[in-house]
Length: 127
Image 1 (cartoon, rainbow, N blue to C red):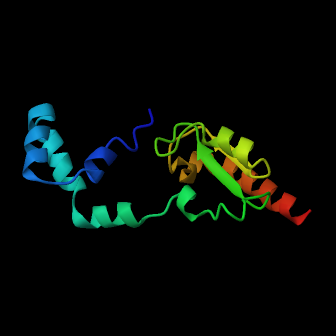
Image 2 (tube, rainbow, N blue to C red; image 1 turned 180 degrees about the vertical axis):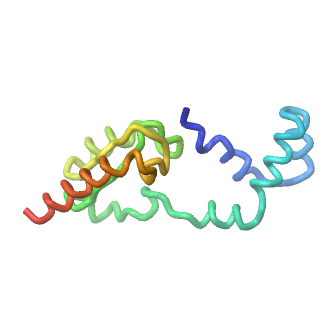
């Protein structure tokens, strides 16, 4: 199951007495403790300062065949329709989709697939 981002609502919700009481009423002590942990300042800084694909692509120039986007079928952080949208809006962009969640492309079982995708991408670039 793709559950990587279940805690994100707690990360982006402000931490105050009313929220904590409401979470205690709804979900119990575990919900409150999760909220306290996820609201930790460094966690907040990393989440709010980190970039993601749509923030660092310069869309005005137009991604082309020199752009490779790797998506996961079970990626809970981006929409499954992203691959289709890219194919329609930017048909020259190369999109590769693996069966897994966000970040799972870095796991050893996916290394051969990723190596092949990268090799094809860089071989095509040389042609």
